[in-house]
Image (cartoon, rainbow, N blue to C red; front, side, top):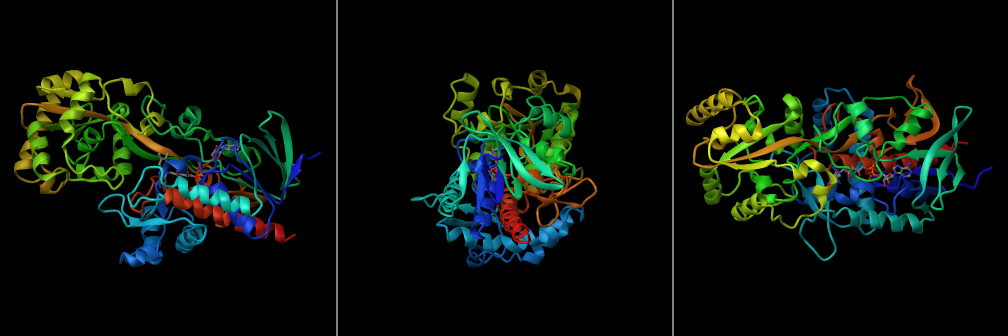
Length: 501
Ligand SMILES: Cc1cc2nc3c(=O)[nH]c(=O)nc-3n(C[C@H](O)[C@H](O)[C@H](O)COP(=O)(O)OP(=O)(O)OC[C@H]3O[C@@H](n4cnc5c(N)ncnc54)[C@H](O)[C@@H]3O)c2cc1C
């Protein structure tokens, strides 16, 4: 016997689930959202904005990126290994989603790049009373979506965990859950949308599906709640497996998101080496944190080091940093001495709290050093000394001529000379997992044979397979963009399925 019922039950009230709820309810479906946490918005409350193409903000800012160009770019980037029909629909809907949200009272600061060579697709949400980009600005968007959902009669059950999708004769019929009171219940429905945000908080699944050992060779964000529940339930219900990936970046535990000037300075395009003391990257690409993360992940022990000297710092004091990120906005090294002293003495600085979400005991391990010689650099880091000396000599020669090893532009070729060496140790990191279950371009879940399962939909991170093997930072805001847009599609399509009875 069922304890409650609705046309559509949505598992997970994060970015994708709450958007799906509004979309389905807007079309007339009765909707229940099961959210195991205490808020909607999920991991996306930490974010700032999302992807769209041909939006009114882009037009006002003279951004000439077209839907056609964005589509071709992403399909080229993924070598056509992803669902072109889904990519096309996502891109086509993206600008309308901005307008749709504006009607709910959401405001945007505009469209931004994530780094210089990326496209201007990141629509950053405006925080009330401020014209400045702010960390966690996207939480305003989820407040607006939640209010809209409630106005449309959506029932949001907080602290309620879905445990099983019940199938009847090949079609979805109910969801089993454990309510806030700890009592197991059943909710009947005609369609289910699963949007539980992947498995970024499950070291076991990270190990089993991605081959990393969290806390050792991966220091990705651990957002509470995203434990892989949805994927497990989908697979159990007959959903087909697809290869999951990690939205990989890189980090310096205990430094990134804490000592922002040290962190940003050690991410400038200066010499990077691996434990063997060898250079392995054209450091110009370091502003693409995904490419850098990929590159670090394939080094021995999955670590890498950047080295700068006092003479390079002096150059930055005079000219400012090469790379300035929009969200950190650190342009100079004016706080360098203060931060270095605070790090070395252990005094610490006031941090945003973001670092706590992707650091473990490593943050108490030293990952930044001030050394007086290359010998000391090798001793504290474990980098092979002989090889490091040879690499520095070779690199300094390239700086005097041209980088015919990896072709880094001359303007970033600063020799490693001086009396003080600053070294940072970097590890692969990431925002979370991506994908794992097969869906079609209607967000309908497919079985192992590639056939749609009646009434079963998935959206957001659980179903995000549109980036191929690496997240596409050249089109920034893409994971939240996919979460919101795929949620909207799933909501409309689940409703259409119900109306087809
Ligand atoms: C620090 C940070 C910053 C980010 N910034 C950006 C950005 O600016 N732009 C961008 O594009 N992307 C950004 N992202 C990524 C973005 O947050 C995700 O792409 C997005 O949140 C994915 O949406 P989702 O709905 O799939 O999952 P989530 O938003 O994580 O929501 C999943 C929800 O499901 C719930 N849930 C899980 N299991 C169950 C269960 N069994 N029963 C009930 N509920 C359950 C969880 O509690 C959670 O609320 C950022 C991520 C992080 C960590």
